[in-house]
Length: 108
Length: 114
Image 1 (cartoon, rainbow over the protein chains, first blue to last red):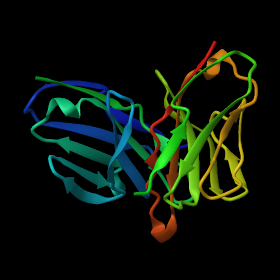
Image 2: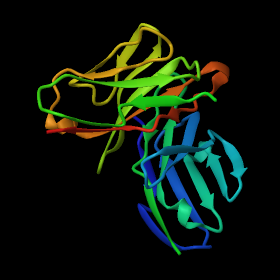
Image 3: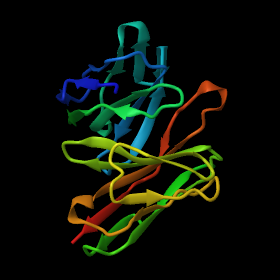
Image 4: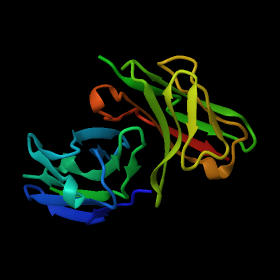
């Protein structure tokens, strides 16, 4: 099956800093999502991005499907950005495989 | 607004009891999924359904069952609860029409088996 790696596993930032989270996957996929799990455990959809680049406010994501990776950019981080960021990948008719996540802590 | 709900949000039960966790979505999505989340394992797929009367086993299906009698609901049953099934359970749904498969998650159910 598809293997998914995320880096870094842990990240501590000062409020206002920028960061880049990476998701590598072992096989070609045509579905990819980024999620944020907040400290209360809720899974929030950030991006559905099987290819290309999307932006939503301070967050943006880029997926290069041919090179099997996706990047999530967080700019001007805020304490509310803290939590765990997951990427999940898959193909049509198959189910998502989740990465192990990146735990982000943003300090005031 | 369309949503996906889970109940109960918290459950404590005893070893050997049967437990059913409810999942209800108003997205009118064909696909529904159950995951469990444990420290050190991330999210793992338990069962999934691509439509009414369709159910399939996922990565960690032993000890669990599901049934899909309508589009909106996919209840998850633990036939005889075990301490190893203490976990947080998430339900999700998606719709593959138009080639998209974006999954939307419910709020989760925290289950403790004593």
